[in-house]
Image 1 (cartoon, rainbow, N blue to C red):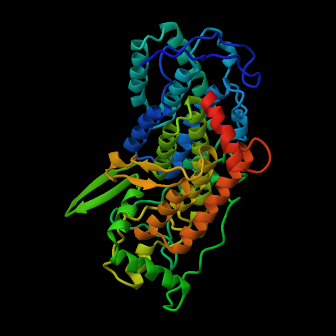
Image 2: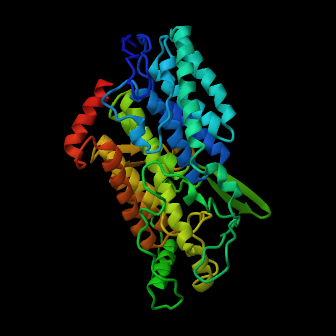
Length: 459
């Protein structure tokens, strides 16, 4: 590896600090933020973090790192623009000695996750290993020490900011009790787990105005009438589930992303852990950013924008899920069509409408298309650690379309939930692009993409 000096510490914008840190050269290649993401992912998998909560953790873990990076790049929007309520000063003006902003940003990701996650303390070992490797590569101890200080300042600021999003109040809200009534959601086999985060609509969004801002049209009305639209939707799920092709099976498995599935054998129940849907899209963002060689600063920008998108998209779809409280196909089909029928995928423990996969995948696709480009071909191998193989895509939007329909093949969503979720997600993604990512005027992927690619190469 040829040493390549890189200017690491520039004068900080007055927006975030009042002084300038000393400059220090980097004796090694730029760091890979995706490696920090991998460590955070595995901690979340261990903790069985629910999909909406995982999105929240991703957003905050990336926001601190982005705040450090943005302080060193005038071409990137300030963090206050990416999160509308974020007015926190990282106190970078107190740092006078030389530090490495890439090290500080990576450390901030781990430190924020360490402070937020239930088993976050396990990340302390990863932090130590990260610093030891940098020391082995020749990073001066004083620079490492100051970089850790900056990372901790950012993490502390983010933790303080996160305390005002109402997450801490969830446990005090009224307990959710499912109602056994026609058309209503009710826990499903084999584990009959309690509803996941029924009060998530109370969480403060980072970009959208409110949880209900992007509510789609109401789903078609529940009916047992064999001539009704609802019955035909349920029957469509039933039929496809009984004659899945090999390709449909692979698609359903690849996008399963169920943080905790339970398989039973006699009196034994075995739990299987996987990454969340948001985690899958975070990995896609990191994968393609690395493939496109956009550089450290833009990679952190992409991961932060994606994390924020996931958080708001989950708030939006969870609001609609509990507002409609719609019955799952498995419950309907077992009661009115075939008592022995089982979906290919295990039904997740929350109401059906709208499809969370559809919403978050399409929102992600819009944001990543703007930041990294349209018709970007890539091979998604990020699910291999979870036993789901790999698949090739020609664009983020194609991947989002496949992620959406996978829930129909899996037997856990009706078609109108997927179609409405697709539109809901696209609207959220486009809103985020126009609100926080476009420098000025309407979003134009072609022109703005060229500008963003230049920025990524420069940083």
